[in-house]
Length: 236
Image (tube, rainbow, N blue to C red; front, side, top):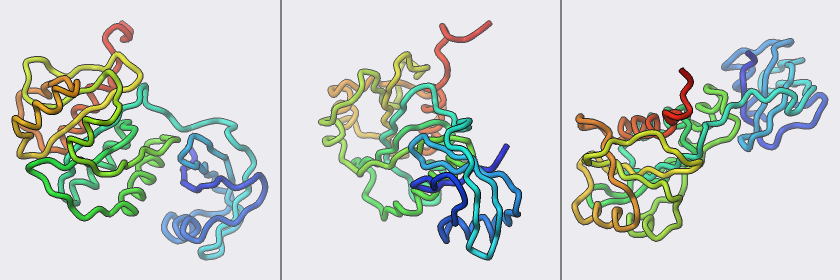
């Protein structure tokens, strides 16, 4: 399978010189050679097949010969949004990377009583999303939404399938809808007041099992449960 690289906008058909940053990556880091096949994607679902025809340091020339001829990018079976209290780096970066590979549509950092606003490295985080999309063949980039408080989060419109990862009698399972949102609190847990605030806003408490998980692990465990195929759709 051809390697995938992000560029927005996609170049037109025919020969084109890639951007200096992408050219550096292909020419100096990956050491692409003339004749190598690549797939360019714009993060919005469009892709183009191309062949490297010349490498001159950071100037890499490709021949774009087909756009959307064969979409290699895969999409998750449903749109899943995550609102979570971000752990500190590098664990936040791990969350963005593996959350993208798991199929999360958007990440929204939240502020809680037991977390404070941390320094946000959005440009670096966005690069991590791009690299993860290229790795797992996703054609649409997830987004990192603006940071909000829990009160602001509860005032926003949300899908009917909204869940809160916390101690509960019922475990989180596969979502039966096309869209869902999951809230994950900080490692110290949400306060009773915050849990009441979220449940009053329609977020259904769900357990992720008997073990106490780190925030980034809870995000991945919750996403995996929600994105799995519902039992009625499994083939025997």
